[in-house]
Amino acid sequence: MTEQQHESRWSLTHTGNRVALAVLIGALVGWIGSLAGATGTAHVLVFALVFGITYGVLTFVAKRFF
Image 1 (cartoon, rainbow, N blue to C red):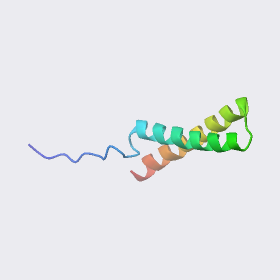
Image 2: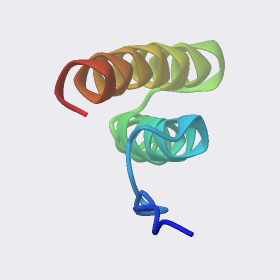
Image 3: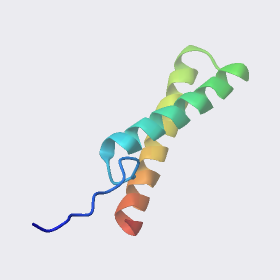
C-alpha cells in the first residue's frame, strides 16, 4: 500500500474553509460598518459585498497558488 499525502484541513482548497473565512471577514466588516452608523439594508449590503469579494479573491488564490 502506498502512503498518500493529505491536505491540511485548514487549506483554502476546501470550499467550506473559503466560505467560513469570507463569512468571518464579512461579519467583521459589517460590524465595523454598524459601529460607523450603517443600519438595516446598508448593513446587509456591506456584508454581502465584502463576502462576495472575499470569497472571489480566496477562490482565485486557491486555484492559482494551490
